[in-house]
Length: 249
Image (cartoon, rainbow, N blue to C red; front, side, top):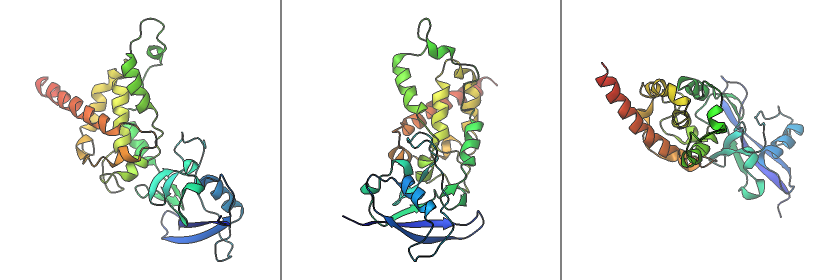
């Protein structure tokens, strides 16, 4: 059994600074995940050369693979650090920040571009959830409830954006996560009132047609959200909207 855990971490001291690699070692203990290991390194900020350094910056919140805050690249794969078990990973464990978002410091990134895209497509329901309570006849069919549940699990972690070749800091593409939220909210009995507005938002530059159908997004989604299904359905919705716009002039 190994007596230590080895890390190779990509670091960056500030948003404008150059990145560099630093190695760390810590005593082995069973049942560690990447977050708990980073907590140990925070308390013992000494690199593999024995030099005391600034603690590694990273984010976490729920520790239940729900919030998405701790998402980073672990051994080349975007995933949640809280769900990445040390015993399942090859060493040295290589940690990098998501590359499609600006780095604030070390493993901490700025997801504002994704949040701005969610604002653009109005990824919310304007009025409260009376339709979801079903006090009378259900207004959302059980089949549609099942589909909507899968889309509602999105935690804006950024894994799908990281894997998407069309989404990067220089592109205008809003990415797969906001597109899936359009599909989710367009199918709600109240959300449908803003359906046209959402469709027009994704028909603009940087919208649906910028998707290259690489299908990387659905492969890395930790919640198994059917992202490519949403994109296909939105293709039909935007085509129908284009004809409505054409003949309403």
